[in-house]
Image (cartoon, rainbow, N blue to C red; front, side, top):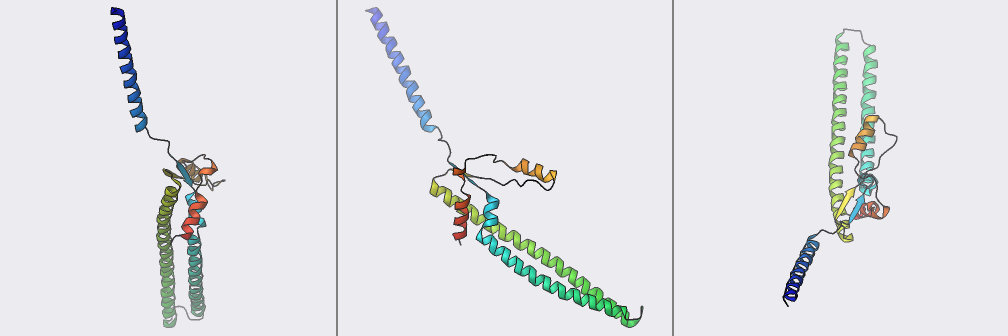
Length: 197
């Protein structure tokens, strides 16, 4: 009888330990994070192929054509002034006056060129930043609609690279090395971005 009490006591201890371990395992399982659902987007492709980017390119081409026409007119005026200066007696009052006008026109042309270059660069930066912000919102919306936990950027590695330095910089910054195409959201994001305001 004493052995049966000891055996019964041992069995009770084993049951308590097993139940405790099982309960603890269940608590850990409930607290464990499920594997993340991931999508991939090629950011450069979306930005460069979006309808909004194409609108910007058209605007920039129109602005460039207008700027080139203005600079051609200014250059023609400079060339005419230089030709006129050659007809004057060097050192004469008339030649000095024309030389001064020529230098003023050249300085004005150089200043306008620098202004246009800076203006184009600033407009491109603002436009691209705005488009990038819209793209992030679209990516968030697409990811939420698909029940994804995260979206990772993938960038195209252009080969051959212009220089070894460019190649090494790309290798150092490119983090996505492989993924199955079923995770690629690029086309969906681009279509949604084109529809967004």
